[in-house]
Length: 498
Ligand code: BES
Ligand code: ZN
Ligand code: ZN
Image (cartoon, rainbow, N blue to C red; front, side, top):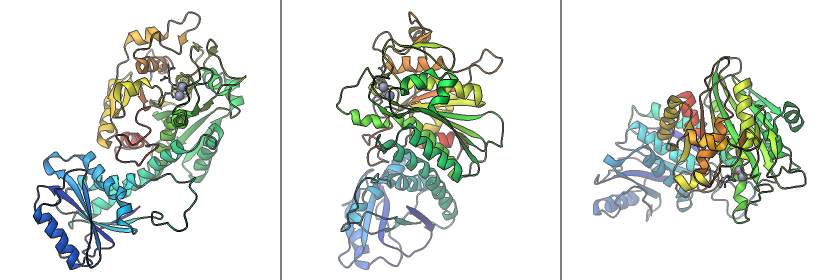
C-alpha cells in the first residue's frame, strides 16, 4: 500500500470518509472529482442519521451517476483511542472487496495527528494476505496489485502525517516478513531454510551480519538442548545470530526467538486435530527476524542483536526420549520428562549463548511456549515474565502503545523450586503438576539466564509467551487470518522509541 498525504481537494478513486459518531452533518467540502449526486447521497444519509458512525461500522455507497464512497464509523470522539483508530483504518482495507479499484482517497476532517496516524497504520497492517501458494486466477485479479491511498487533511498536518505513514510502512515490512514466515508451510520452511533467508538478508544490507551455528557446530559446542530437540528430524537444527550495526560496540538489546518449524511433540506426540497449526511454533523466531527487518527499514543506527533457535521436533529412531538427560550449553543438566516441552530446551541454549557471547544490555525471548498461557489470557494478550521490573514495565508500556498487550505474570520462587527438583538432573523440563504451566515454563527459562560477568546479578531478561497471540484473527482485527506478526511493532518501539 502506497500512502500519499496532501491537502489536495481532488478526489481520486473511492472517497473514504472517517466519521465521528454524534458529529452531525459532516461536510464533504468543495472537492472536485466527487460527483454531485454522490455528494448529495452522502449528505442525505448523514443528515437523516442513516449512518450512525459507531466504531467498527462502515457503509459503501455507489453514486447513481458514478463514483463510490466508503463511510467509516470512528465511534464517539470521547471514547477513541489509538487501537480503535487502527481498527477503523483496518476496516478500510478489509472493505476493499466491496470497493474495487486500486485508488482511494481518505478525507480526514477534525482528527488529531496521532489518531490519523493510527488509522493509517491500521490500513497498512491489514493490507496483507498470504497467497504465495495460490494459483493465480487469470479472470479475477481485482484484489491483486498495490493500492494507492491519498490521504487528505488540514494544511499544517500533512508533513507530520506523511512522516508517520512512512514509518508505519517501514515497520510493516517487518510485520509482513514475520507473518510470511509464520504462515509458510513446514515442508518449505525448515531450520536451514530460515538460516538461508537470514543470510540472504544479511548480504542485502551492509550494516547486518548474520552468523549460523549449524548442527555439527552445535554438537561440538555442547548445545544439548538444541541438539536434543532437533536430532530426531532429517532437517537438522541450527542457531541463527543477527547483528545490526555491529560497528557500534557496547551492551545492546538482544531478542531471542523460539523457532520450532514444526512441533509434532516428538515421542510425546500431540493429538492430530489442529496439529497443522504447529507450523507457527516458530513465530518467536519470525518476530525476531521481523524486528531486524523493521529496524533496518526505519534506519536504526545502534547495535541490536537477534538470535533464533531453529529445530523441527519430530519422532524418529534418532529422536530424544522422555527420560533422557541432556547437558545444555550452560553445563546444567536437564531431565526431559516430556519431549513436547521442547521450546524451553532450545531456548536454554539460546539464552545462555546470548548472555555469554553477545554482550546484551537486556535479553527478551519470544516463544509460542505453552498452551497454558492461552488458558490464562486467551488471545487478548501475551504473557510477560521478567527478572527486572524496569524492563518489564518498559515492555508493557511499549505493548500498550502499539496495541499489542503484554500482561505481567509471576516468577514465584515456588515455580523455580518445582522445576529444579529433578531426582537425577539439575532441572526438569516438566512441572510436577498440571497447574500454572506457563509460569513453570518461565521459571525453567530463568535457570538459563547467565549472571553479568563477575557479579551475582542476572542479566535483565524478559520472556513473552505468544502462543495465544501469534496466530488467528480471533481478536486481532489488524490481520485477516493466520500469523499475526505479533510484537514486531512492540519491540521496534521499545528499541527505537519511534
Ligand atoms: N508449541 C507448544 C505450545 C503451544 C500450544 C503453542 C498451543 C501454540 C498453541 C509447546 O511446545 C508445547 O507443546 N507445550 C506443552 C508443554 C507441556 C508438555 C508441559 C503444552 O503447552 O501442552
Ligand atoms: Zn511442544
Ligand atoms: Zn512447541
